Amino acid sequence: DCKDALKKNALLIATIAGVVLGIALGIAMREAHLSQLDITYFAFPGDILLRMLKMMILPLIVCSLITGVANLDQKASGKLGGLAVTYYMTTTLIAVIIGIVLVVTINPGRAGKESIESTGSSMNVEAVDALTDLIRNLFPENLVQACFQQVTMTYQTTREPIIAEMNVTSIVPIVTNSSTTIAYELTTIVEQNVTVDYRLLGINVLGIICFCITFGVIIGGMGKEGEILVRFFTAFNEAVMKIVGIVIWYAPIGIIFLIAGEIMKMQDPAKVLEQLGLYMATVIAGLAIHGLIVLPLIYFIVVRKNPFVYLSGVLQALLTAVATSSSSATLPVTVNCLEKNNKVDKRITRFVVPIGATINMDGTALYEAVAAIFIAQANGIVLNFGQIVTVSITATFASIGAAGVPQAGLVTLIIVLTAVGLPVEDITLILAIDWLLDRIRTTVNVLGDSIGAGVIAHICRKDLADKRTETVFDVDSQSSDDSLAKRPPSYTENVTYDNAALDNEVTI
Image (cartoon, rainbow, N blue to C red; front, side, top):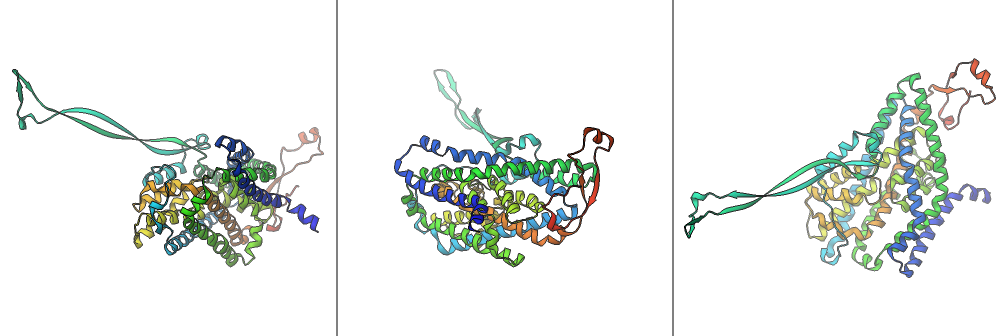
């Protein structure tokens, strides 16, 4: 029994060992005082893991969403989408409230801005521009370009010097040696040219999701005409998941070097802890409360099962999130864990999880709320009730636009700071420890996606269990070419099955 248990959980054990070894190796290698170039070389196996996981994001999102939506009728997909958005918005708002209560109670910024060292340069992002860019990216004009670029609004300032003649009637001309001098004024006209262009590198996930959901609904409602497309994307998705299964076995090795490399990059951990220890404790406490109490409690109330047994099935995805710091890169592992370990219906995982990896950012929203109020406290600014409400609402909606990549929350944090008039440049105060908090909040994001899939699957279990008609094509590997030529190119038969048999392939 022990041998079977080890064999069954070999990958999970290897992943846990990879995290532990990565932490130990990173701490030990700090004594070598390697240069940044040497650290980059050292972390190379981890970079390969990150690249392999990111390689699977686009085909997985496209195929899983199209097949997930196409295999549901339009009424069911609408209900599923409504439940998903309601769950995501509710849990995100709860996370923000937890963060605000903690940061107001603990007051981590009471030491003041002077005691914290700035660690970088700030960026400029206007809240209105971020919102319009979000909507623009939802409807990409070029699907191929959306696979590797996002649209963004940029400003180009031009300054044109112009010599303008002054009102000479109000001045007295200066006469020198029979010549007259008239004064002129040199002015500068400043113009801002606004351009909307593809400048941000990275997958436009929102645009891809919007198109795939629409495409899936259309081919799902086409009947026999759409069957061939549904079968194509279903087979494509299964092939992608097999590749994911291969990549996952390399994950423990890559995790060791990803974590070790990040620890080695830290400049002075003791000084950072001294300056920002209370702020770190506040953020981590909020994430722990939300991830280990609130989300499991929601699962228990709705599903009436032990949430920690369910979470043990996605532990590998959570550890991968710690290593990669990207919910999008963790997406292949999350889907694999939910389907293989927790037996969540494929129609749920392939519809809900890709959307969750894009818009469900509980950890990011909580972090942004805490960081904004911390910066206000460090500057001695007391936010009134209205401003705190503004922070909570802005953090909730800004997190939806956060890309599922490392440290994307910093960009959306600027939107929150701008909304309540806080100094944007003070974001540099928290950059030193953002790499660590980013990994923890990404783990909470992935945890929220996983819990959401389980909750929605339970709520929709009756809809999913209803018998439905499925078209299955006949495949006879023993038939000769002649026999195939004598019969119709395809044969279909209506097959009905219940929810328990969804994971089994039926061949007629």
